[in-house]
Image: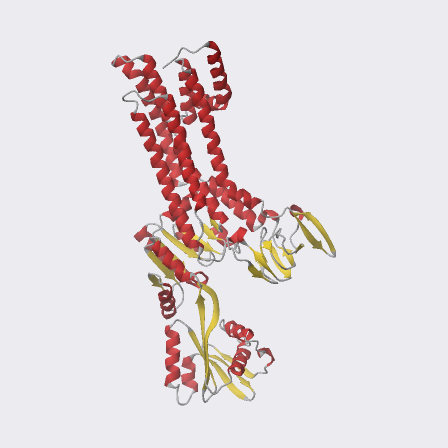
Length: 603
């Protein structure tokens, strides 16, 4: 302990304390007057005390190291937010537009809804809109996280900030610049990064009580040994000041926000919008996930999966007749048959149909080339055919129905000429996503659907979900989510964000598919997968779990290092040097630990 410094060195240290600590003292003294105790209050008392007992050099070091620690803290938070800054620069600031018969380049702020945007190959699309002319592949990675460019044609939606790869596009602008999908993402992510998470709220409350307790401990360390145990005043006042510095909750205060901000930024860059630290933490603790079936686990569009014409029938001719008849039908499955005919390049629209009629709940009939054809449910053919349905055809129908497919039969009054099976196809990656979720420790995966039990069971078995609930109305889904919450406490629900809104709201974490295309999904869900891609779900779970672990590590480490340093007071070994390095070192370690979340990739 050396308080005998020369006048010039005292002046030099004093000047560096004042210059380096001006902002610190300004806040610290103001807080002290208002009896608000935070780390700046503690630091101010410690530095003034150090100068008071003649430890000018150590007081100056405390100020300088605190300033370095603050700079590192703001650098790390900046780095964590960088991913969102890079999103801001994605969309062009000006664009080539056509109004009437004039073309000119203007700033995006001046573009109006209805303007025609001209986007050349290799250029970025400046505004959200709908393609009115052209065909191209568009790289949507900035919005949806999809690495593979998506084919776009007339009437397809495109987003600001996406890259037009190989065709000339004309796009009709549908949103103002502040309402574009990318502007919404940036706004929502910035809000999410600023929002307080549960662990952050805990740290704030903890620091509120912790700071006065540390001040009392420091006062006790400084006063009790000299007053009651004959200790040296200089030595114990110094120990008290060191206890104040080590008690600074810098590392504790930054332990949560740096992890939250980093994780939310990383997620946004990978096409996952997490709307707040609370949802990130809740997602990390999820035990069960419920899936809406249609449009989430399946494509949501019916397709013809099987087509069996009878051996003596011309396959293409029959399909042309069936498609021509279905062209006059209002049945939702008719579009699947017409699409199949179009894929086969069959010109069914040229076929002339006479005596067409639709029989509700049974099927349709119509005359083609003077022959009456019937297309409908297998049960209807039991009525039409005099001798009933042949056994081999019945067996084929049963087999297809057991796989969860809707079977349609085509025939005449005397015979069956073909069988078609239509189904809503399972998404290519649904099965692997369910497997990954189980391997990540999700205890229950539940498929919820309004479909009949046979279809639901067939798809559920194919996907490997642990539980299947069929024939549900929206209110049934809601009741089931509540039941799951009482069993597991934390439950996630994933759907398309529109018809699943009540169930999404009732779950701990509501996850919407295809947030880039629907404002409803962005607004109602806690987490939105921007691409229509279920494959982002395991990444989101992995990132949330890692964030939760890092937050726990940071809080435990911050408190642990304080305790160890404070225990050094007992033998009188604690110095201001150890105290400031323990505080600053801990801040640096928790910051670097939080930034590890940037490395988590979507694989």
